[in-house]
Length: 112
Image (cartoon, rainbow, N blue to C red; front, side, top):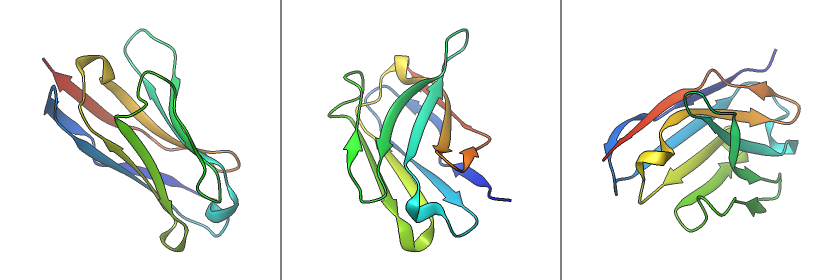
């Protein structure tokens, strides 16, 4: 069974940066579309970045220019570099793969 494990969350002041990592077990990571999602208290889970197997990326306007998604297929790892963080970026961040499912999430808290 493939597992996704996120790490790198924490507490940061507004304007700061964090780098999230997602490690996948198993051998099908490289062929998966992958993404980062977040869920704030009382809100629906939303996509914040998505990356194709070849490295093509997509971001919603809310994070474009501040977040960067990347992947290392040789290490079954995906990253999310988050810069210029805002309090509204606070939430639980989840790693997702189209055929891999969801990770357990990592908390990101941005203080004002």
